[in-house]
Image (cartoon, rainbow, N blue to C red):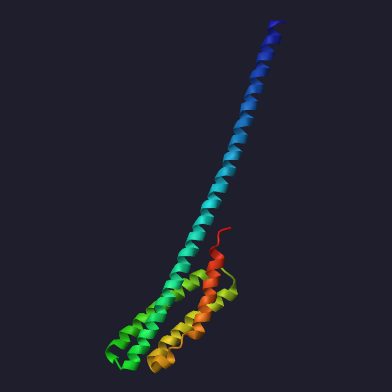
Length: 163
């Protein structure tokens, strides 16, 4: 073998090895990109799951608190406690507004029919505060809003189930 042939063969081997290393590096980079994309998707799904759980928890909390405050307004009205009824009405309206805000947040991620149901529930709670203030216990019948709330709660349960 001549020196020229050995030199060409060495150059060809070096080129082949360089191309192989470059191809291997490219494959490794593509695989890392794929893994990073998967990790970002897992993290974003987890954030959405946790945020929905938090909002559902707050919706339940504010609804139950609104029920309690509406009953407190009705009891104050029936007892003739005019001094404290205004404070109770303010607190009840504030809690209903907080519920409405969380329900609206939940509805923004769902179809229009849920938005309408959640808005209707918040409006019915507002009307109940006014009715309890005017009529006492007779105006504080919460049975018709309970069914709407249970539907909201079922929506929450179905939307936070992890796939």
